[in-house]
Image (cartoon, rainbow, N blue to C red; front, side, top):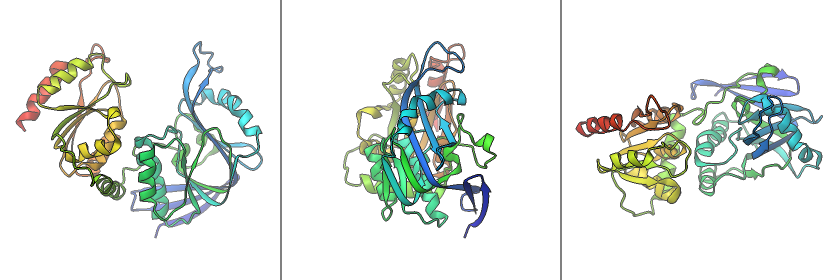
Length: 357
């Protein structure tokens, strides 16, 4: 059983669960009569830094107490947009609470509010699982309504005996008692540092990369795709048509990879079930760093996973691969003189060596 320590921070009650199964201390906070509001994308004029261009992709998360005071907040950008964001959403706070939830609610979200597979399964769902592993009794788990339909299916299968509520953006929710993981409010626009609270960091994605959780998730993906009888290629390259994280010479990169008998897959064009089946069936996967790599949770042991990086990226998918017994390779192919382009010669050299293994 995890040890539990109770400490007081203003109106927030801290429950510290020291659970060695996670390899880290797990911090949970509790707030009675809490009010919560989140948004996906709101255009904000950065008045504090006097930027000429408005920030057009600002996600936000604000928690208030019974006195309507902001206790915690977290944003997709740094804290300089805090006052503008609060002003932009004030009209929502002034309305009567649209939803009132009794009992104990466990909030699984964070500042990544768009609900895609990566954020939901690797960051949000694991908090609910962690809550259960720590033997914390709650009445309902709270996720975002923006969660993708397939991700909701995974949530409902992972939490079969629990009540799950999906809250809407820009809807003020009142909770009789709200529990949440400390890292839910971590990130660049958080207010933990000023409050003196513990556990403010937020590693994304795969905030824990816990092996038992990932293996359970892997078993579930096999269960949800067992009815698919499509024949899948053994060597695949995960590309993308959207401009995000796409190299300027992406077409040239794809031709080089195709010449080594890889099938090019654009995940945005195929169903989630087919994506998972493709990853489950492949022996070698090469993919651009990004949310599409979430599908490696379904790979069989010792699958080769090559993650291509441009200028930057996180180590999260490497952590997942190691936890699941995959053969992970980190590959940087960005041209040193122009990070927007891939160094095709370096890529071809790598592919030649990979073929010899």
